[in-house]
Image: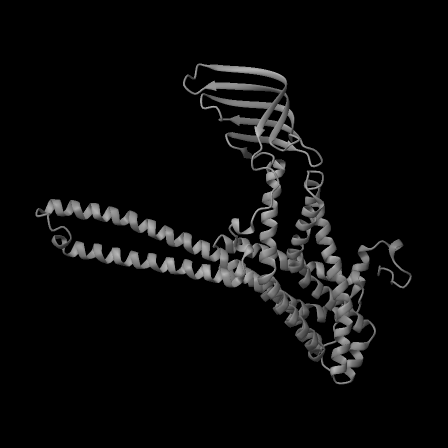
Amino acid sequence: MLILWRHILRVHIGPFISSFLLLMLVFLLQYLMKSLDQLVGKGLSAGVISELIVVSLAWMVVLAVPMAVLIATLMAFGGLASSNQITAMRASGMSLYGMITPVLLASTVVCFLLVKFDNNVLPDANHKVKVLTIDISRKKPTLTLVPGLFEQLVQGRTILVRKTFEHSNDLEGVTIFDSSNPLFNTTVTAQHGTISFSPDYRKLIMDLNDGEIHELSVRDNRQYRQIRFVRHRIAMDAEGFSFQRSQESAFSRGDREMSANTMRAIVDSLRALQQKARVRIQTLTEQHLDGIVSPQKQFPGQQQAGDVSASVLNASAMLSTTLQNEFLQIHILDFEAKKYLVEIHKKYAIPVACIVFVLVGAPLGIMARRGTFGVSASLSLGFFLLYWSCLIGGEKLADRAIIQPWVGMWTANIVIGLLGGYLTFRTARENLTIDWSGFLRFIPRSWRSPQQPPDVE
């Protein structure tokens, strides 16, 4: 039994490592295509760019490991089935459950290590990415310019850009609202322009073309001046934009930059504040009811019935406002607590997917009877889309407090786990195979190998 277990695990190691490296390469290339053009050639050193890429690898590991487990399981069991080793193991008295057991144990170890990684490495890596991005944006202001949104790069000036260009500092459709002069409100518009730094990085320079300057007096609305220009340069202080390494402790951490234990402590403190608010609500309500039953006790100076009634009504109105504020605070605290709970559950739900994917991959690999990477990747794609769509959709619904955090984070694992359990049970009792002849109809005949059967007319 142990010899067969070692053989099954040995068959999994190669596909797992190769698929993990390939997935990491895909994620890295995607990240480079998205972000590298905004970093290279902007005055940043190669060390800073390399550090940003390295610390960004942490979130890629979290996503790549469960995917690699599924692909490796499909490839390993598909290869064992295609070489009739599964049949030989069954003939020797080994059930499918016995074949899956060593893989489940190994995936449990991977799950445990990934949980440790999520809580000890990933939060610090995400925080370093955040700090580096802020430091870089101080040096490269165009990183913070989003087309169609107002941005305040320097004090007193708000900039709106209609279009930016990835490979240059050119701008199109520039509008600047200048309130730095307390006597005039100035609006500058330009068809085109560029943004750059002075050689000493002390000034932020905008060279504008084909535009207008509109000045309106703050004291007298009748004082208005309009200037048209072909070329116009605006020099602004670039204080805060030079690249300087910040202390990581200077920035507060978000929910994705904390471990599960830290977030649990925050959730406990938020729940304690909610409980205090509930106690205040109960106390205020009891005091108000006691005042209604015994008005002279609450309003001893009021002798006439009309005065007491007016005082009771005023107290009721004040109580209503106070209670509304308390209930609103409870709602806000509950909303914040659930956001942290979503991240806590995510730190465990994604690693547990390593175990769930084994239950799906093993029977599918045996049913496919093909251990090639192409077949394994094709079968994995559908489950990847199902899993990540459920996970992302559940996270968004849970963040909006529409569903409970554990429901949003664990639904994908529950659905795919039940499907995997069903497939494992069926494959253990029956010799199920995937009929590939139906898929051949979608492949042109010129692309098929001679061994592939023709279409059935």
